[in-house]
Each structure stands twice: as C-alpha cells, then as structure tokens.
Amino acid sequence: MMYAVIKTGGKQYRVAADEILEVEKLDGEPGSLFKFGEVLMLGGNGTVAVGKPFVAGAAVTAEILEQGRGPKTINFKKRRRKNSRRKKGHRQDLTTVRVLEVLASGQAASKQPTGDGVIARAFRGNGRRFEVLTAPEGGRGDDLSLIGGVGPKYAEAFHKAGIFHMWQIAAMTKQNIAALEATGHFGHRIESEEWVIQAQELINGRPPRAKIDQAHA
Image 1 (cartoon, helix red, strand yellow):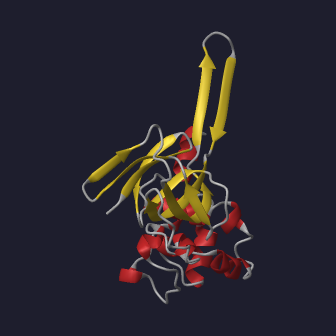
Image 2 (tube, one colour; image 1 turned 90 degrees about the vertical axis):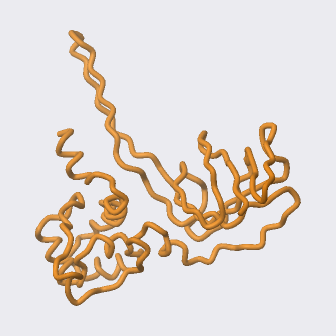
Image 3 (tube, one colour; image 1 turned 180 degrees about the horizontal axis):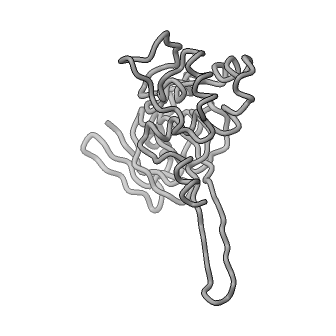
C-alpha cells in the first residue's frame, strides 16, 4: 500500500488511503475534495522517494469530513510581586479529513468524495450511525452529564427522545440536531455548546470539558 508524508499547518503527517486524521483548519465545506500538494516522501511497494523538499508532482487527495475545534486550553501567566496576571483560553480550529488516494508523479485522481463521509467518521459513535432506541442498551445508559451543559433536565429530554448513550449523540448529523431542537426541549444548545463534538471527544478518551472548566474556575 502506498503511503506519504505530507506537510500541512506546519506539521508533518504519515498518511495512507482510507485513514482519518485531524489537521489544522483547511478551506472547504464538508463533503468537498482537498488536495495536499506538499508531499515530503512517498513509500510503498518496496520503494521510497524523498523530496527536496517536496516530491515533484506527488499529491494526496482527501475528503473533508467536518470542520470543528479542538479542546479548550488555558494559558495562565503570573508575574511575582508585579500584581500581574493574565489568563487566556484557546481552542484550535481543526478539520477532519479522510484520505482518498496517494498519487505519485503523473498519476491522475480516480476517487471522488462520496458525500456521506460526514456521518461515516471512523470514531464517530464508535463507527455506528445515529438511531433512536426504545431502551438503553444493556439496560443502562451513559452518564450524559459528562457533556458540559447537559444537566438532569436535558438528560431527561434526551431519554424521552430515545437517546441514552454517548455514541448516539456523537453520531448525530445536522438533520438529527434540527429535529431534536424542533421539539423545543433543547433551546438550540446542542449545536451552540457543541454537545456532539463533546460526545466525540469523550468517546476518544478526552477528559470532560465540564470537569476541566470547573478545575480552572
């Protein structure tokens, strides 16, 4: 299998076809094609080509799956005996892409975005698509309050809508969100407070944002 080392956002990534990765923000809408032209190295089939600095004519095509933001980071600086403190928060803009092809010099792209990649992310809902359940799987649901902004009121509204697990929230599309918010029980907070992204972060092992914010407070 062909692989490549690409440069984007000042970082280097080793990529191969069908891999999903998060990179610093790229221009483009979900479902569109993006071409990485800065290829530092090509490998596969027992051969390796190293660029000087880039491999001439090589490229990597990818489908943009989602535009999002990374977890919040806090930068706190204090100057002793100067009565000076500065606290700044930051969340990096990120783009999630799925690699379509690694193209050597002279090769033409043969794969195009499918358009359904936004709901087919490998880590989204542990690979499951959104569905409504009549009861929690295994007889017990997840602790939805780990999502910042979800208290008992909203957890109960999720349960009444047939949503008991983190993977269900992580797999929601814009259409699913619109249908839930049309019930009037969520006050447009699902999207504004990034509950779907928070659920995806929790599935990926990141600590709850709510706990991080409480610790800093």
